[in-house]
Length: 149
Image (cartoon, rainbow, N blue to C red; front, side, top):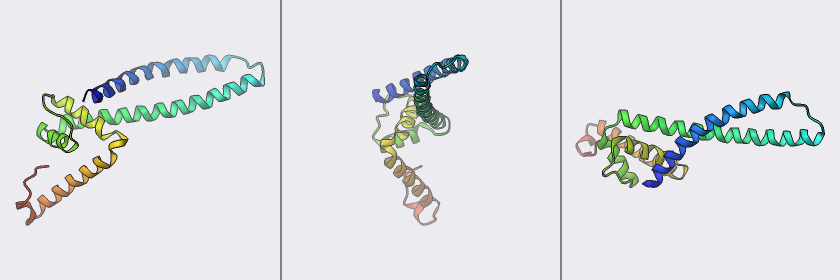
């Protein structure tokens, strides 16, 4: 689980460095707007840089959105779901949860669930949890369902 913590720390570091990087890019763009272009080669180089910059901005936006979703999910788990339920989810995903505090469990789950490699297992777990909740509402099946969601 050290890998999950490393990913989380990298996310936080990147978020801080991106905000600093974006403010530096804004000041560089202002200075570039004021400079004169001497040849077509320079303008071609700048257009290539602009397209690279646009793709970098798009990837940065996606990364920032992913980090925001991870943090939002982590906060949701930490504030709205009790530790026993978090441990059930960890057991399903085979994530170690012993000797971890609730915020760490929430963070690990959020990172796991937002990893693209885990998409199918996450959707499967969510579907199973919904099915259990639906069965518990039925008068006949609720007597057979002991799993609490």
